[in-house]
Image 1: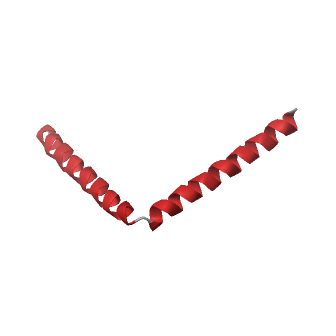
Image 2: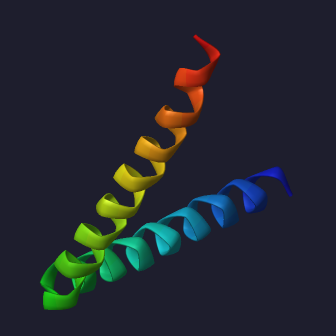
Length: 59
């Protein structure tokens, strides 16, 4: 029974890796992915600058 659990775990891990590879390659080939990544980075930078302004009041 232990062997069946190990085999099931390995098969599920393999399938999960295949799905992740598929979706990552789809995202890498998409033209919209670069726009979304740029917007995400800009959002993080805006959030960080807002947080840094608030933390400067503590010093």
